[in-house]
Length: 261
Image (tube, rainbow, N blue to C red; front, side):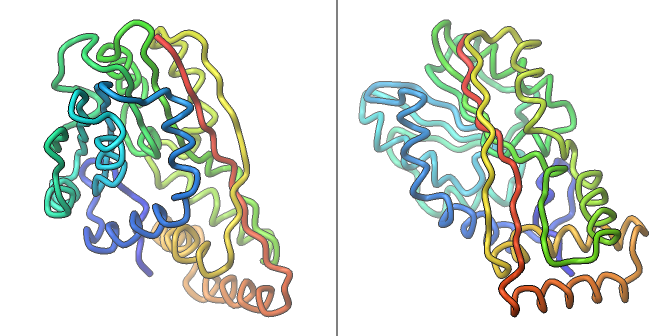
């Protein structure tokens, strides 16, 4: 069983599998992406930083929005993901670089907007990352953060005891599996004001839920010794049976937070 969800520094995941995972997630969220740009007021001539940029799709989209007078910069701790981002194309008004959100290599107050999508759940010191993002955004500029709260995973159609063990193991396998619910805490401590944190539930089909979350969650439970492999296999068979009956359900709470300096 593969685990494509751990993007923390030092993780030993398969880079190609992680790129496929990021591409799949991007396709699922494509319709909502432009709305987040509008929420944050990203427009012509803005200078925008995308922390944890992955393969750079958002950076390229932002570069098109801000035009020749603006700049879009993507930073990621993974050299493999930055290499993939560069290989996919770098607009004239964009840059990609390898680096940590916990020690951003930029001057104070140098961006109009900073984005951190599914980042804080993977960094060892999320408060330090939030402090850094506050430091580099100008007064009146904004941070947009998006993270799941993985403890809130909802699964219908499987054994309860095994489900609890799998969810707990998955939460504990991440740097911060409770990242979504902690957005406001981090933003307040960093100094942001006008903080609006919106929770919403996203739901996936069995095929997508297994590919993007549940396979990794089962792998985490086996690694942690929470389940034996035969127990995990039985749990997955239960999900497959529920899906065949039309009774499977998967959902997770996602927090979208906008904060202004």
